[in-house]
Length: 195
Image 1: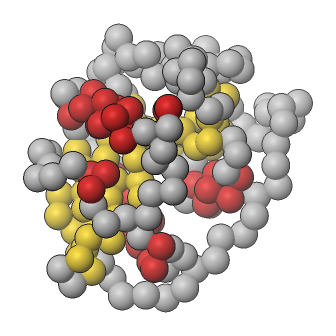
Image 2: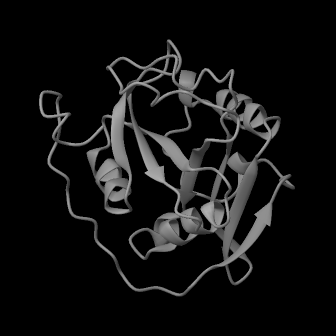
Image 3: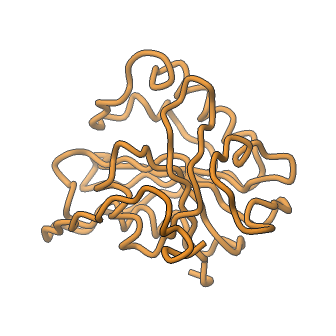
């Protein structure tokens, strides 16, 4: 769905992302993680009660690790982790799109078990925000993925984050309420051009 097709839907003007130069992180690609991600020394202001609790985070992470195509990347600066990203391939029976609250083009939410990589989490420590580290971790995770596209969800209350992903090439597909106690999200998709 293009922006023109979304003209009648509520949109916010995209804020400009600031980029500061910084040292290049190194990466460790994982298919199984050595320790819980929520225990990495990352800024986690959203972990708290209900949907954003550590228990619910662990539940969602566990779901991802059991799905074919699971992958994770942890970025390091020297020997310190500075961020991570993980996700999995959406299967034919996925419920990823079941909370879609806006109309989508025919076939936009059809999954084959090989069509879409769902980026579930991308986090970086505060000291590297705005340096391009998040983009590098994102790109490392998607490097060589066989799927034709990637998708992610961004809370509607975070227009700057959405604008950042749109600057990376993602396009809005619709509004999603993935769980009854979850906040409302924007679903974004990115064509994967054999990265």
